Length: 113
Image (tube, rainbow, N blue to C red):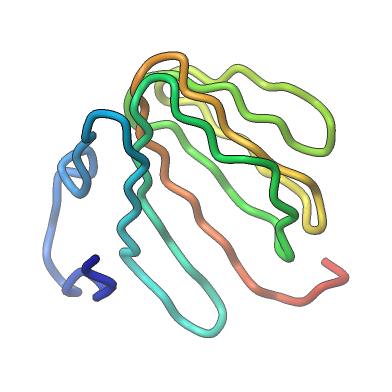
């Protein structure tokens, strides 16, 4: 898997950063720094990311498709273009009823934020 960041000072079409592959979840980190991470992930229909506890809050935006996100024991249906901010230390999971692509932005400002 390519773990390198995308080059700076170059424009991109965001939905072309990562493509869906049947029966898979793919992720591409666009920025990975000490204080922040930005990752694009694609999920094929039927794929799930099991419950994980995130150490930091996240800004999640759907850039293709639709998904169901569970965060802090609440379910949220997010269609194309919608976003949600999740809290630090919250349980999170994703469920793809159709293929979708999401941008996840993590800003590491501390555990008490």
